[in-house]
Length: 409
Image (cartoon, rainbow, N blue to C red; front, side):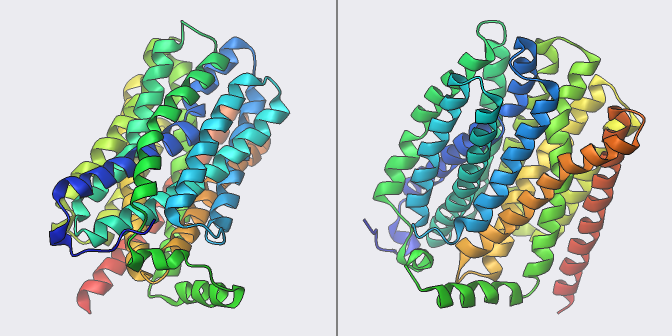
């Protein structure tokens, strides 16, 4: 069903809010549960003895690889963004439940890989669908509400794990999360069915031949500054994934009480949700690349902080610095890339997501390599965090200079 694109004045404000809330919930499900629920559940799976500590790294790497593969093939899936989103959400629910049903680590590797694929599809489809509607309705500030969904999903999953930690085993928690996710998916599925992308944006999903796809995607790399943005987004993926993966574990080393160390992850999500709302509200007064560069620099502070000062206070501050910027960067990066390649947003958003996925896949690989040459795992992690900080600062400098160059033109 295609809804005709109307002038923004003909669309009531509540229509834009409904679209934004549906997109927000889809990201909460896809990322907060499909992608990131493993982070607070990992120590609980270790506690229950159903998972070996070394297997956790392989499961994380499998998910990152799936995210990369999903991003690389998303633009070649011949589905409209709304339909791709629906397929992704349904399969994320199924995969999440399946993790709780089986106890095989080999099955978990496959399931976490599939969760990565479908999460990448969901992010790309939600961005194309949600940003397309916000542009059509001239409601750019509601973009912050859309991307706040990731942080809200993290908060919900984290608080659920805190509440359920002493009430049920980790396997049951996966199944309950899947049940909750199925309820959350209802609104995005319904709204996406009745209100697919406006024709202007929906044209990217029209079936085309292979030559047209190749020509369109090749044009993306020639758009001004897109290649640099893609590289910076990949550095963001590498810089973000290490604290996102290891913050709860670092907190547990300091205080082995799930009711206390477990708050590191919800704090991460709270900062992520609040930051997108705040930045979207003031973005009209600021240069987008300047804000993006500043976010990289602030995230770098959060990444390096536990290396300089390891305490519960520093862990919470790191969660705020990293969590308060990672969804801001996602929102700004997607908006900036889409603005530079508006004729084929799905393809450029897929390339941005693939770059991020490649960067985050390097995270555990770098830690593993440094493990081989370091005295202990803590030292290897510290060296990896220092390298991530350098990458974030280098990309921040590049983005700031790009913004300055654009202003001088």
